[in-house]
Image 1 (tube, rainbow, N blue to C red):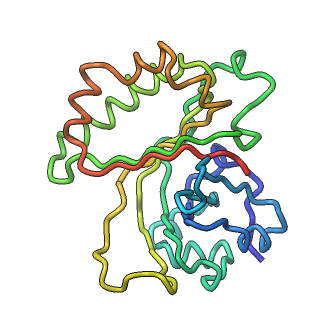
Image 2: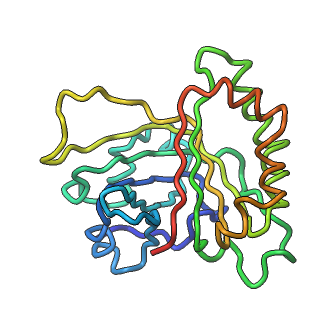
Length: 232
């Protein structure tokens, strides 16, 4: 049985996050959790092109957190590895103590801190790993410009940022054992949305994604991923 956390994905009560990605529905994990775990999937017309995700939040004391890796995180959650064949598992630590949110009066009756959002936009990026200046500039841009502009986008609710600590890819019968291992992007941002149709294409979203600072940052990004997940 999965030890399911009581808080939602963006809860400020938990500072560590395990994310499981799969090209197949994660029904086995849902069965372990007795339907209590929020599962997300991409809206794709072809099932073979879909991506599914599950989110487990953790709150760890400093001594335990210092030595924790993906295997011990799975043990802490009581997740059986036999259920995870063919998945991509990542372990993150939150950046900052709280989620960055739109003012409460714009979110009624929904709060992403108490309910799992209907949509999650998952954006993972890696700045140049050989440049401390590039990484510092990336984080300053995200915290001081990008999220501030996104907070004006219709339907955008909140964001929480994470840094990758460890990862594990579990093979299945179709995996290529000789395929090179690809390092996942270092930084993850989870954005809560009411609905993507309200956000993307809006003047506010265009303004948030078309600034000189963003252009400079994105020119130095060496790895990136982006998914739009819907609560299933």
